[in-house]
Amino acid sequence: MLLLSLQMTSLGALKCYGKTNDTLTRKCALFCTENDCPSYCICVNDKSQNNACSYLPVIPNNTLQVKETITAGTPILSINSTGSDKWTLALQRSGVVDGSIWNELSSYFKLYKFGNIYEIILNQTPDLEGIFERFAIRLKQLTLILTCKIASNPDQSHSVHLEILPVNEFAPEYKEAILKQNVSENTKIGTVILMLINLTMDRDVNPDGRELGDFGMTNYLFDAMRDGKEYFEMKDFSQGSIVVKKCLDFEALVPMNSTRFYLNVSASDIHGVTTYTTLTINIVDVDDLPPEFYYSGCPVVLDKTAPCHVAYEALLSLNYIGPMTDIVPSLIHARDMDTLNTELEFSLELSAGEKLGISIWLQF
Ligand SMILES: *[C@@H]1O[C@H](CO)[C@@H](O)[C@H](O)[C@H]1NC(C)=O
Ligand SMILES: *[C@@H]1O[C@H](CO)[C@@H](O)[C@H](O)[C@H]1NC(C)=O
Ligand SMILES: *[C@@H]1O[C@H](CO)[C@@H](O)[C@H](O)[C@H]1NC(C)=O
Ligand SMILES: *[C@@H]1O[C@H](CO)[C@@H](O)[C@H](O)[C@H]1NC(C)=O
Ligand SMILES: *[C@@H]1O[C@H](CO)[C@@H](O)[C@H](O)[C@H]1NC(C)=O
Ligand SMILES: *[C@@H]1O[C@H](CO)[C@@H](O)[C@H](O)[C@H]1NC(C)=O
Ligand SMILES: *[C@@H]1O[C@H](CO)[C@@H](O)[C@H](O)[C@H]1NC(C)=O
Image 1 (cartoon, rainbow, N blue to C red):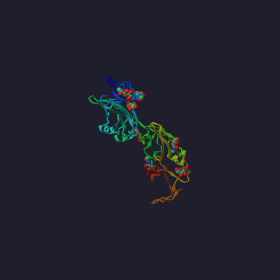
Image 2: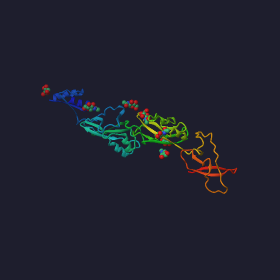
Image 3: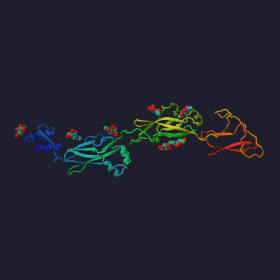
Image 4: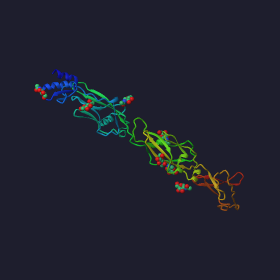
């Protein structure tokens, strides 16, 4: 009996019995003090007299880590029960997250007892995107409170941190299937025409900050002639801002059949996953040019520095009222120099010297 009680105080949880008789039991008790259990002994957890909480396993930094993609049903922590201790699990409430959310988050974890082992099991995959969608919180870490209850002793609580590690599940995406931008001709060099950051997203929830990394611009391979790299450049790679690099003159681009450009742009996430897309840029003519007279007898000159002078003459009888059709060398023609083809209106004015002069107005 003396030996037995010694064994009880030194080991607590284990009690040894001889398989056949009492003599053997005493021998076994000795072995138990050395934490050994030979084949002729039965070593069991003593449930009736042991009144202690079992220890939690060693957890580095007291922090458990699970990936957000962990399968429901996976155990994340086991505790060997001494037999007389009862464990409960709760989530510590912290921060601005309101109570109802903590209640719902608690249901992601369950504490099960299998024989003498308690296990914390993930009841639901802690998908960070799903949690963000449901509760509008970017979850990073939770604190689990494990409480051991034993008869006639105060409860013992332990806090264990649980870090939910983000997994890169999604590549960057563009908010629109086709990226298009109209750019007016004569847009000043250096003007930002578009910021890719405003048109890009990444479905991954990153509790530590921005999930999108840098933007990029590379060669447009499908049609090198229409690669807009000559006219546009990416200035700020963190925002993906595209700026005008070279003057855009619609009237000069039309003869080259290049009023539409393509840019091969890309967005990467912080893990380096990159998505490419094509940005189509249409150069839009603006009403930047006045109308001009033209006469078929004048040579076509693209630069207007050497105008072709035409004198028109019409002979009319005094007091004639009606259309003037006998104009030499031809009827007077004018056109909008922009491709907008704005409708023109003609009018006649008497100039200071009382000769007939012509001026015109544009009608919008
Ligand atoms: C107890 O059991 C052991 C092994 O079975 C045996 O050798 C021993 O004689 C027994 N002692 C008594 C007192 O019965
Ligand atoms: C729990 O008991 C098992 C054997 O029953 C052992 O392998 C395991 O290491 C024990 N765990 C702890 C935390 O004591
Ligand atoms: C524990 O935390 C410290 C600082 O927070 C860190 O440097 C260390 O790597 C962590 N150890 C483990 C095993 O996670
Ligand atoms: C671009 O201009 C065209 C007409 O030239 C217009 O139909 C289209 O809606 C414009 N697109 C944008 C994004 O402004
Ligand atoms: C893009 O979004 C930023 C804010 O993030 C805003 O300041 C800027 O005006 C937007 N730019 C464009 C071109 O839409
Ligand atoms: C854009 O660039 C990437 C990387 O060089 C290339 O794989 C892709 O085919 C290009 N797309 C177009 C439309 O040029
Ligand atoms: C201009 O481009 C159009 C299609 O974009 C094409 O059909 C036409 O042949 C091109 N003209 C010239 C002169 O390259």
